[in-house]
Image 1 (cartoon, one colour):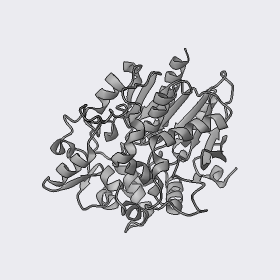
Image 2 (image 1 turned 120 degrees about the horizontal axis):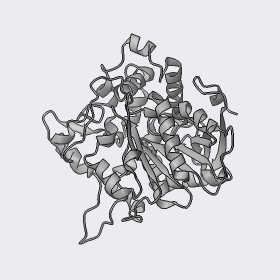
Image 3 (image 1 turned 180 degrees about the vertical axis):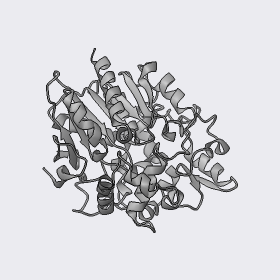
Amino acid sequence: MSSSSKWPGLPSGVESRTLKINDLEMHILEALPTNSVGASMLIILLHGFPELAYSWRKVMRPLADAGYHVVAPDQRGHGRTKSSAQEAESPIKYTDDTTPFRMTNLVKDVVALVYTLGYQSAAAVVGHDFGSPVAAYCALIRPDIFACVVMMSSPFTGPPRLSLPNGSPPSGPDLPKIAAALAALDPPRKHYVMYYSTPDANAHMTSPPRGLRAFLREYYHVKSADWAPNNPHPLAAPEAAVMAELPHYYVMGLHETMPEAVHGFGPSAAEIAGNAWLTEEELGVYVAEYGRTGFQGGLNAYRMTTNAEWQADRELFAGKRIEVPAMFLGGKKDWGTYQYPRAVDAMRGLACQKMDDDDFVLIDGAGHWVQQEQSGDVVKELLRFFKKCAK
């Protein structure tokens, strides 16, 4: 077991190891079931950005105690997972090849993980934040492997339409068009995904003026339920003036870095001392890991969403819907649910064939980091959904 098994907040029975997966040395956290509940009861948990497998620490042991084999990898480009093309301990650079971060290859990582663990199928794949679309595509592409899917904090609107000469335009938000319109506002703004795609974002975030710990504390705070101004609601249309209603960590000042965008909105000393979902010791794990690796691996996945050249592999699945039972789980104070206008409607009405009304769940007292902020409620909802899927 690696030293990550000694991380603060990691429960007894959640262990760490590294597997050869695809072209990766993939680091995973793993909790073995207390009691077997049958064959192929594997649960895969996919983290988002800027997060790690460690982000699932509060839910892994309870799920395993319910009888599941629970595995959370550091996804490609994150934490202790390294590719064979990566030099030892060498951070990913902006100039490195981004093709390994195309969606089909991220799905291949997860499929290969299932097989390497000795399974032919998984009871569920669960994804949070950027892990949500990866989980969604796992279920969309390989419903024979993934019996159900849970998307957390980021709605899935389906694969893009084919780009045909006389056909419909590609679906989904036109981020370059939105970027131009946001820049024309007074004051001028920009979308955070466009910022994440720039060459300088990694350096801004890795070496912020007030230090990495202060930046991450502020960033995690403003996207949580602890930040009182978070009052998410559906947006009417994908227009710049409407999207400017999003908070400053989604629609930033045109010339701001992310550390500048969240500076001044951090928690007080008393709030930090009273924070049970992310203690100073637990925050230190993120600070140490991102201080070592930088953010570019995670940022590369966002770069793919703004580069039309790399969207083509997803067009192969144009018109296809998720056919297995699907659930959306988020926090009531999370703007991520509504950051793209009409995304929730597209997910519930089109992208997912089997998403029941009671499987669209927003949890009280939680913002974006729902599995950390309200882990008990998340475990309760996941187990309810898994039980229903198994019938």
